[in-house]
Length: 324
Image 1 (cartoon, rainbow, N blue to C red):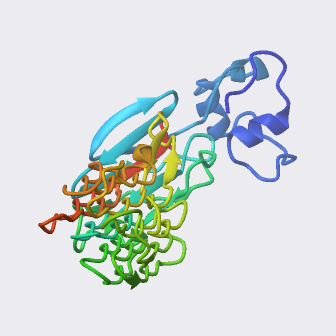
Image 2 (cartoon, rainbow, N blue to C red):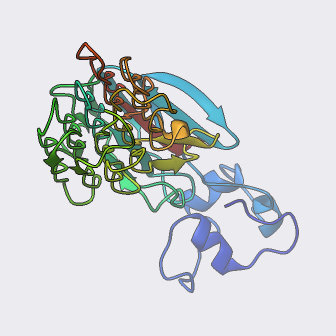
């Protein structure tokens, strides 16, 4: 805080100097008081403290740095280091908020299940001193690409896991992951399981055609909800919407299930705003998850050929703290 420009109570000076309890008797000649007042020697009055602040803020480098109001944002779309050179104090900032999203998984081939979203964790929003405490050191950042082993981490403190791949072919189950992959669509299949706190299960498929040979794989799970069952256009699970970077952005949506030879629209990702790829509407490949959003890839279609699922979207790590 900043001390008032008008009348100041002694308790407010103690609070600004982080002296507890605030009723502690204050010595106007104390070094901390003189530093705050910017009066190193001689006579000192309460008026010298008006409008003064003892705030110190976190200072750090790493990633792509932007600002939003009084907050600085570091965005990592690949490996790097969040290097803290100064920690600050309670009057300024001492902690960070974060969003950590792993890469989404690949959608399945031929009536394929949608890929599960990458795991997602966030601490935002918190007050400037209510998030994750940091020290003056370097924090290694890991950010995986879409598909495969694509976990993300803020040092060893906060980590998430990759999504589960969508099922392939006639009756392949979805793979487990942070969010589970959807099951393949022609016969009965199960969606993959999820990791608690990171995502939700994928949807299975019961082999019910939409007409002709248009079977549908299950939707991949997302951070905000499970994938839909593949007995109708099977949307991927809902994602997570965050404003940590100053704008409203969706992350970690599941991929939609792929169709067979149907001519209708593909199964939507979960939803497109959360980065999940759409499932194929028939003889086509599934759509890819959006880069740096952690969405699952859409399932592939089938008609005289086994069309591949889309790739999962890569992950991201975003760090936010008060800097002024």
